[in-house]
Length: 277
Ligand code: ADP
Image (cartoon, rainbow, N blue to C red; front, side):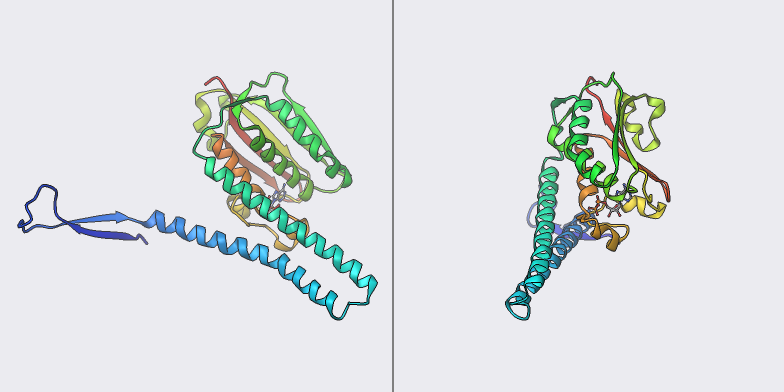
């Protein structure tokens, strides 16, 4: 259903006593859709923040009242409150990242980035988290990677979000592979055909996890979209990680493709234009 704004005016240059009027129609459909998405987003964000806040407020009441003298309960409740407060900080940090990246999305980043070094740093930062789950992070970097133009902090966040998901949704004791290599025009999937005009870098993050059913794939990068709300929330996710990833990829004029086999694992591949186009 399309939405129009109609304006009645006088055709330009026509004398006031002229009899004709001009009707202009402005198509507001896209504007309305964006407005609705914003309203949904604010509603979702408020709901996501309200849940942990309600838990904290509830425990404060309990600690002031019935559990006042129960030392064991107090420690347990304080631990839960700390966890909920952390969840709120994570949500706020992700919301801020998202709005910062969105603000800059229309300007192409221009710093020269050595993707190999950046990936080593991103993987190192998450290695302790992976090891805590008995997982290995394996890097396979092509030595001939061309430099690219980008924003290093955003690119680090992009790959850390993907590796973090691989750790959260991968099987304990399995391996995560991060690989980067130049991609020729014949390697590009249809979704990345627009990048054919120049050299392309391909970075893939592969996990051995439960995989994702096909019907979820198109919605995965939507804000707050989670495949299994209970399971994903238990992993402490905010549902914003892949939305942030998508915006960073867009800003770098790249494309992300997702391949997943239920029961085997998922591969998130990012195709990025290399410098020198
Ligand atoms: P979250 O913070 O919940 O992880 P994301 O935006 O990063 O949010 O991911 C959205 C959802 O996509 C997750 O809740 C999870 O259901 C699914 N998902 C993301 N990455 C993977 C993966 N590597 N394997 C399986 N499912 C995944």
